[in-house]
Image (cartoon, rainbow, N blue to C red; front, side, top):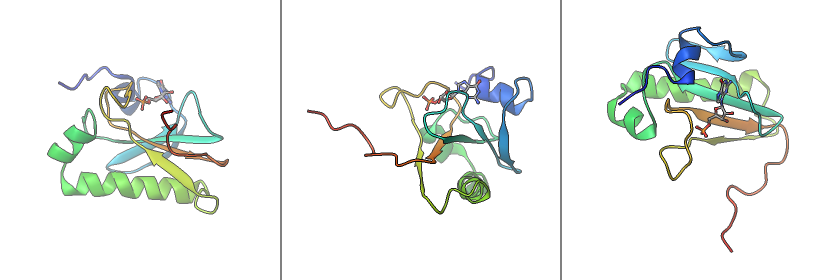
Length: 120
Ligand code: 5GP
């Protein structure tokens, strides 16, 4: 069940401040509070969705399109397309998702290295 008091729900309601970089009808983008790259943005749907499983099962086509368009728009507006960027969405326990409101990370601003650490 969706926790309406998770930190991103509170950011969406304006109860907690965020360094916003893009907003439209379906999505909000803001800087991660503990950045892992020179640019580290989180893009979230405005609807109450826990993770990618919940979102792809219940969201409308317009919400799904809107979230992904917001990712592209955020990258363009911040000038990330030239050097490139990485997107990542942790979904569920094995992925180590910490905040239970779907979010897509955008990382950019330096060479990001391999996608995941290889197991020995
Ligand atoms: P996850 O591990 O769930 O994929 O990522 C959660 C992300 O949310 C982390 O990178 C963390 O730094 C970020 N985060 C947690 N609390 C806040 C907050 O209050 N404000 C912002 N802007 N980011 C947060």
